Amino acid sequence: MNKTIVNYVEAHKLAILGDWMEAMREEADERVLRVVSDQVFNSTSQEFIDLIIMNIKGYKSDYEDRLTDFSEKVVRLNWPLTFVTKGLHTFGKIIFKKMENSGVVTIENQSTLYLAYDEWMTPLNEQIINVYSTTWEKTVSLQKIALQELSAPLIPVFEGITVMPLVGTVDTERAKQIMENLLKGAVKNRSEVVLIDITGVPVVDTMVAHHIIQAAEAVRLIGAKCMICGIRPEIAQTIVSLGIDLSQLTTKNTLQKGIESALELTNRKIVTMGETL
Image 1 (cartoon, rainbow, N blue to C red):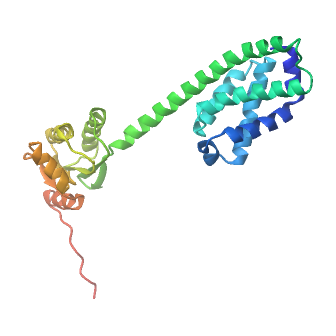
Image 2 (image 1 turned 90 degrees about the horizontal axis):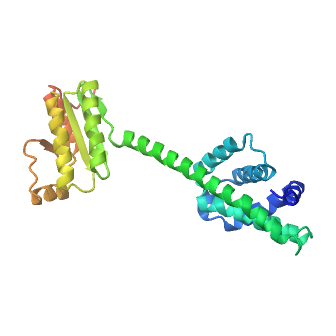
Image 3 (image 1 turned 180 degrees about the vertical axis):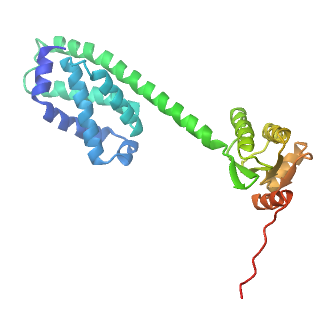
């Protein structure tokens, strides 16, 4: 980086930071300002400027690690990538405006300074985009894994009785997760009866029904009974109109009735306690 720019930035760091933060607050959309407090915005902005200055001055020893840490932070803070890259552009505009006002940039040297700055800016911009994108992809991947683990839980409610509540759309990928969790959970909990509650499934079409039937058949093969609960009137009508055969499965319209039937199948029942005299 050209020494003229390096020396100016180092000498006017605080003024540049103040102008940059003011400009970025004006350009930030509601997503940034709504989820980030003033203190966090200020400290993160300071860190961003420090990174830029480190790169300008050629301090490469721990720059890569700090850039990665910064990218992970702004991903967690939900800063859009456009906001981060715009920050670099704004930083350059502020520097040159200040240098022009103070007479550092002249007609004679402006081409040289602009070219030097651009040669530094382009690879830094690409580097930030790459690190940010990689961090974001990693975050999304971890979130996807976490959601998959939570998307089909098998919950023991009584000894020998477990429930799998399903919420949302059941696609092929999720159906595999349901099948795996059902079989592992049924064996682990020594389930005699497994209830699949589809109250939260908005649409049951041929594909969804096929997945559910497959899951129920797999549970039966490992020695447990399977019951489908939460079949609402509109779902029942759809199943009939599509010609889907659920005659081999026990079905209940609510989870409560399913649990009552499961208790009967395991020689138990819910009774109402009389008032104590």
